[in-house]
Image (cartoon, rainbow, N blue to C red; front, top):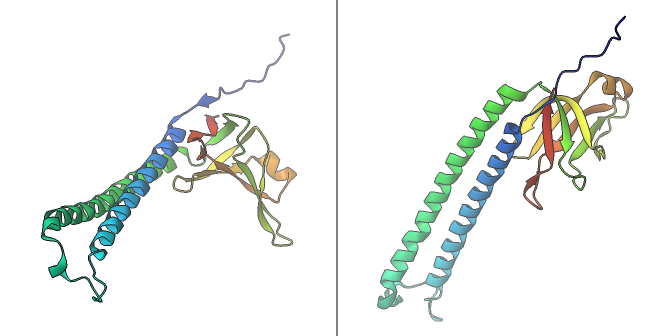
Length: 199
């Protein structure tokens, strides 16, 4: 009589979701950089123009602007406005790309069973979300596990987290455990803190 063995479905690592988090953070970083650069350029231009105000004037008199600086002022002014326009266009395009990635990943991964593992033990990306129905207490607490399992219930690219609904067994053990929140990217070293394995 042969010994019965349990059949285990292979766990497959899929980097696409994590890679899309990396893509989104790069997009957000580009938007932020463009906005800061446009703001800095404009502030420098305004500061330069303000410096032409004389002590006996309330406001800058265009007639007192140095003729030799006219071309430079016009060029810098145009550059300032151009960077503002480019910044706005980058933001519009970037947010549109993020919305497309969000829709694609929601369709593909929501309600999928996963196991999430740390890429390095130095990271602490797991958090338990507790809600006590009796007291109304609602809180997050650190989860020091090296891996967690459950179903993906939410993907939030702009806020850098995934929400996992715990499995039935874990829910029965602690009914106060509502969900587990997983941070994806480490901003200190710009790396993914997790690997996602689909069951």
